[in-house]
Image (cartoon, rainbow, N blue to C red):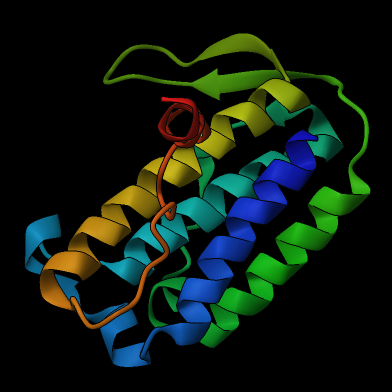
Length: 164
């Protein structure tokens, strides 16, 4: 269930990237303080990479992202990576304990008990949040780009809109 939800959200992102001009992908968007779609996508991708890498050592550290600039500028390369992430998610079936390593400011790093499913849940919300930011930037700067109504909208909001 969690894997499928993450895969569905990644598919939404891939669909957008397939329709998006490479120049727009790399363009600095004024409403987003001049960040790019590519920068937000890299951030999404690298959070998934951190979690999927954690299977080997049972430790996830989102601060230890690679920060691969190619993801920011090459949408076709990024789509290939996203397809690989989907494949890895489809193969990961069971929950297991993890420790989340985190550090805020100058404070010493700490380990927080978590689990693979808990982190998948977090990535759903994290990804949707960044999709919403991307949608804002594109709607303001490139209104001709067609973005689905529920792109970047939380599942609870979609349910609320349906039920009323």
